Amino acid sequence: MGLLSQLNRVVYRRATEEVLGIKLKQLITLEILARNEGCLQQELGQTLMVDSNNCVLLLNELDAHGFVERQRDPQDRRRHIVVITPAGMKALKKAEAKLEELEGEVLANLDPTEREQLRGLLARAMEGQDPNWVCDE
Image 1 (cartoon, one colour):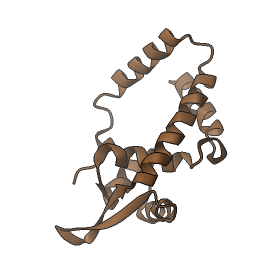
Image 2 (image 1 turned 135 degrees about the vertical axis):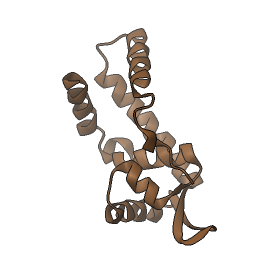
Image 3 (image 1 turned 180 degrees about the horizontal axis):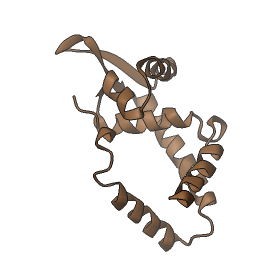
Image 4 (image 1 turned 135 degrees about the horizontal axis):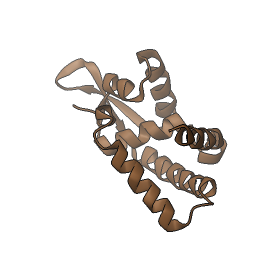
């Protein structure tokens, strides 16, 4: 686990806004929204493990770029549902491609088969570990 944490830090340090085109936390937020076709703002904050104030600041940045929209929940007008926009999907695809390049650089000592094996093992280890990755509406 220590090596996995070190590898994570290497990627995190190199995955700057200049490299990805957006901040890493923004990329993660857009990934969650793209998977869920909308997410309650409160649940999104819980999934990201940020407090409500930081979630609002993050969403304000994404909203200012036109990457997300906040809509009133028709079942409870006090709540907001956050959805990714077409511009957000475009930014996400671009950032994911840049992150893939970065991962390729970081994992350069592994051949393609080993990279796929590593990805598969990590995905299998994550199964059932994070119930908050999917937002419930």
